Each structure stands twice: as structure tokens, then as C-alpha cells.
Length: 335
Image 1 (cartoon, rainbow, N blue to C red):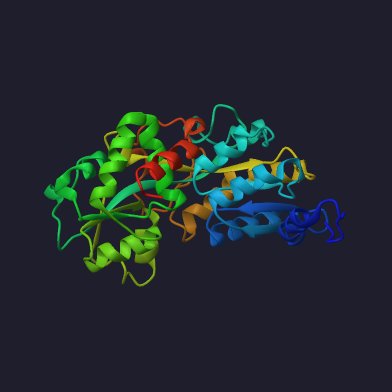
Image 2 (image 1 turned 135 degrees about the vertical axis):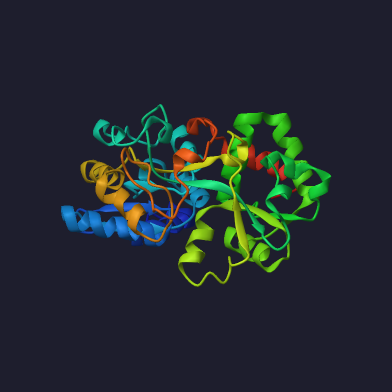
């Protein structure tokens, strides 16, 4: 897209051109709007291009930013594929009618629990909610039995989270689906009274490790990623999995979808098939993202607690309501 835009379009069109211009794929390749970890998607792209010869141009960003941008761009979006960390962003784009159906062969590679019934997008990876705690301050007997226990006044000033991030908002969306609006609003109100806010899950973990707070709610892979490096930000950390179908045992599904407006639908579908197939899922097993593989028969990194042992609650990804969650969190004073 050139910067020579009609005068009638004005400043708004110029702004769109600045966003779209650099993202246009070259030589018939595809454009991926990527909200997943950069290193993970870069590894997927490298493997896919090596095997197929199809070039991929990647734009990195966040779940919420990209999902809202795609909705704003509509049929004019230069994106062919959208990848997320959490599924509420996929639901937003799906609700706007902007995804093409995923090829049946691709859907067949992923179990039903990791894809929406609509078939408009598919799971590509997953992450588990955990309570990280400082082992010098809490014993196993003192840990909360449920995520909802953190609303108890006894936990005031003792735990942390990063409410502004898409990760935590996905966790709240699971609470909303499993417990309903009234219970979720009450839990969020109590959370406001009890918790300490940090920006980013890694910052929450560092604070717990340093003893600033006793525990925090994050996703599992922050701990494993730090342990695989120096371990300096997790040396005092223990991981508590809530299990028992608790809202705190929520497994968030990372999604991938092909835009209905894609100019290269065949290549875009091939990319999604590769990511959910053996090549893409093996990257999760051998790489350093420490996210769970979700393909049928695919093995996750051996350092992780197996998905089957997490006793996660059944959550319908298509009903995770990001707008309602942000409204409730705003009303509670968390956003």
C-alpha cells in the first residue's frame, strides 16, 4: 500500500498506511500478525519456510492491540494469519466475522478441547495458570486451595498479579464463564482490596522471589523459562497448581486463524496446518518457550507437569468474553 492516498481519506487513511505499509508480504508470501512469543513464532516461521519455501512476514504485537486492529481494518487488513497467546482475542475477531473456516485437515490435528466448535480458529499451544509462592514465606499447607480463596481478607497485602495484561484477563474470563457475573464481580472487588499490582507476569514473579509479596497469579512458563536460564528470579519460587477443575486451574489456549480477507488463503492455511502438525508442535517440545503442545499425540517439554495431570476445568473458548471482563475489571478499579 502506497502512501499516496486520496485527500478525501485524510489523516486517518495516512495512519492506516503507516501501519499497513511495512507489513505487506513480498513475493507472494503471507503476513502474520503475531501476539505469541516472538522467539516461538520466529522458530515456527523458519521451520515452515524451510519446508515449504513460502515466505512469511511477521508483525509482532499484543493480543488486545492486534485483535482490535484487525476489527478496525476489517476486509482491508493486510494480515493473512493471526496468532495469539490467549483465546479471548481470537473470539473478538471471530465475533466480527473476520475469520475463514480452518481447513478440516488442520482441525483434525488438534483435540476438540483445544479448539472452538465453530472451526473458525484452532489451538496452537497452551499455558496453565499457577500460583507462584515464596518458599521461605509459605508452606504447602498455607497455600490457597482455590483461586477464589484469594478474595479472603486473610490474603490482604499478600499476593500480586498483573491485571492490565491479556494473560490475567484471560484467567478472569474463565472465572466469569465458570462462576458467573455476580461471583466474578465480587471476587474482583475483593481482589482490589487484597492484591498488589505489578506490570507483567515476570515482574510479579520477581516480586514474589524477592519476598515483596508471598505469592502471585501468573502462567507457568515464566518460572520454567527463568529456571532454564540463570534461575536468579525464581530461586525462591515454588509452583502451586490448583487442579480439581478450579478456576485457578484454567488452561489458556493460544489460537491461530486465517483471515477471511487473506489474499493468500492457500498459503495461510498451509502455515496453520504446519504449526499444528508435527513440525510446529515439536518446536514446543524442544524449544525454550515452555508452553504446552496441543496437537494430537504431541509431547510437551519434559520439564512441564503433563497437561493431563492439571485437572483443568472445561472452558468453552468461544464464550470467553474479553469486553465483559474489561468492563468488570474497570468497575472494580483494576483497570
